[in-house]
Amino acid sequence: MVVVVDTCSLHRLVEYYLPLDKEGKLVPLFERLFFSREIIMTESVFWECSRMSKGIITTKLPFLKTKAAKDLLVKPDFFPPEAKLQRIVNENFTIKAKYDSLSPEQRLAQSEAYQQSGDFSILQCAYMEKKGMAGSLFGDDLRVLTDESSAENDSKCFKKIPACCQFLGAETINIREYLEIITDGKIELIIKG
Image (cartoon, rainbow, N blue to C red; front, side, top):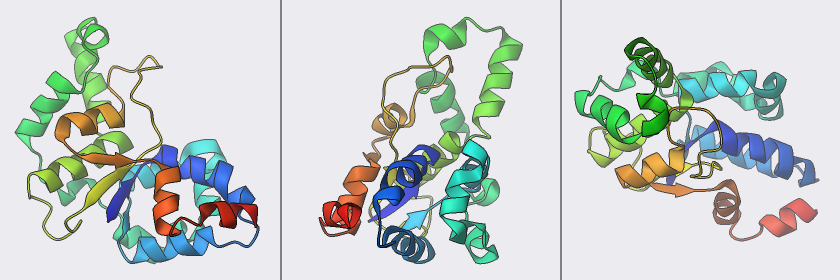
């Protein structure tokens, strides 16, 4: 299984799980999985991680700041612009009432900002993999690692990652489920020390 990771799940990892990992097993595990390309990160997600909560994610996962790690990030220009994906974003990923209440200029600005976000970069990976356009980057079993809920609980015009993934037919997994898998069901032992 390969996962493309979001900022929310990494924030949950460093805030809730790493402090309980007294023996320090999770950071080396994540580092190994990152460098073996079992964890994929987009450049947009990396920049979000480096800015969130004064860079706590990149501070607690220092391997992410290395040149070798940055070379593995999926860059925005990795996938060509896809007109069908743009239509899907505008027609299916928006919260219609909020989006339609905006002026055309505001809608354009919101769409452009969204297309620069970590969320969009993750969904772009899922879309390209589903369409068979990602080459061998993800293997056969790509999942989106996210701790977001599907519920809209903010003022954004775009749906959350799980709702968009459901539309695309892409599987999601949360950090707790992922930790259970990568530790062979031993996450409770690791976080209890």
